[in-house]
Image (spheres, rainbow, N blue to C red):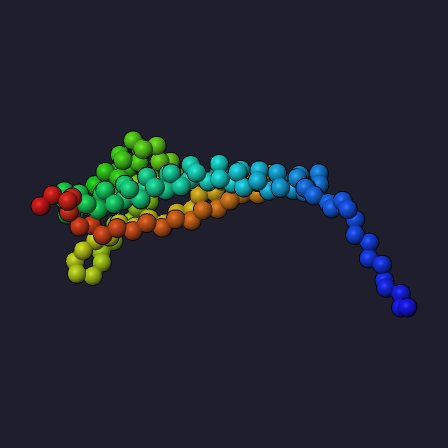
Length: 136
């Protein structure tokens, strides 16, 4: 008779998580939660900025207004919306082909995460000055 190798099967199988794997999972979830908590205000402000740029582009009286007047109107909206990342002067009013004008702004926001680690968010918004506010 040939000897068969004995394979021992343990009646108890390891189940569940070890303490170290639980700590790892909790630390990962905590870091993701921290990033989310720090990111939400930045994206809410970016949404306000985008809405303000689009609002200004649709105003009929701003279509032919000088750049300084457009920037002042945008700054008033920024002030009422508590936007402090940029100012109305940061919004560029430039000429585009066909005699039209464009509002554009590009900016970065830096927020601390942990110790000396920071998160950097880059945004760029553009809108053509159409003067159409939906009313025909």
